[in-house]
Image (cartoon, rainbow, N blue to C red; front, top):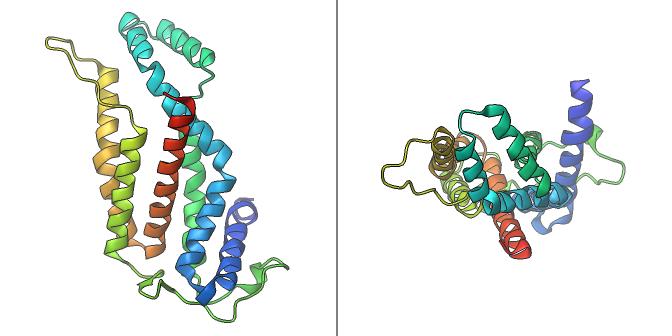
Length: 239
């Protein structure tokens, strides 16, 4: 069952998309084919991603109201949850939609990784009838970076773009007033913000360098397109 879902929904479509672009793109550059494949995946996921971006921006908008509700109903968990749900319902917010796009990207990432690392051999038995098998495959991105090997420069670029994406998407840190009592929820949010801004980029660098350069290239292109998307949504809803 798992194997069927993996191949039918994730691996086979991404593998065929990658091979199609390898055959189509000039010089059969695997790196350029990876970029094209990532863009296709992002376009397919665009409706979900735009909804997640809209949720992020609207969450920033209602943050003062949410903070006021948390202060008012501190220690009253049922009443707090009820009033927060009223805010989410009024604003048509699903606080879990940003998490959904992240979950979907995990199998996509692994499918792309396994697709690239299986090259230059072609699994002809997995190709769709309309996808030709390329005669030659160039594993060097722009003639310099081997997609199936580690590359520190590309890993650093992935980490930098992850940091920039976090700066664009995360709400500003709440400044505590002098003498204000500690707030567990606010402290947790601030900790999460710090983790996304500084810890996650380091994790991405380590992860990208540990595995093949294709992982770093995926994160770099995905982060850049997400930044553009976030700025577009921000301008669209004029938060």
